[in-house]
Image: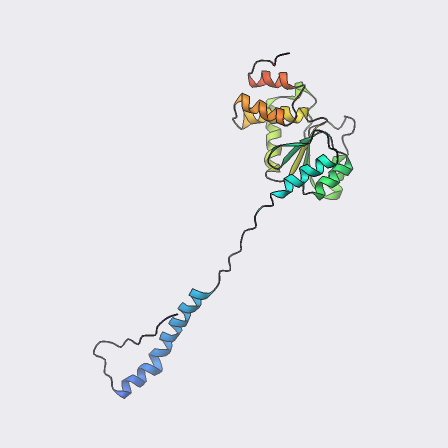
Length: 214
């Protein structure tokens, strides 16, 4: 609300003729200014309110993975499910739970692999394949390529898998140390939490750690 105050020039005449001129020509302009100020003060903001990210999607997806029997399913990093090879039915269930990106570390020549590209193309979801065949594939070049794929995945709910999640754990550990700058010990723990098992000693050597005890 604004109080209307009529301000006349100093020593302005107060004759009836002068007051008629002020009322006819100057008062309307003052009214417009006052009304404009009221509108500016009272108009509601039209800025869009940003939507909060749905943090329940990764939890629901992990629950779905577990319920559907996806081998070694776990979530070592927020939004990233690591696991063994999913079936087509499990992929469909995970997509329904909110997963938008799948990454395989299996060569297409392995049993049960190689069908994902056609499915992703026909159904329109994101899929990447980086063939990691074993300890000999744990190279800096492959880890760099892996890091680029994970950069593409970003914050999307995703499933990263191989046959058992052993290679997944190895690649996550090496990426953590070589690319992200984590300590060898922290990188190894991340790998273990993602399924690293029989490849632990080769990963330890690449991280500059002592071999595990028998």
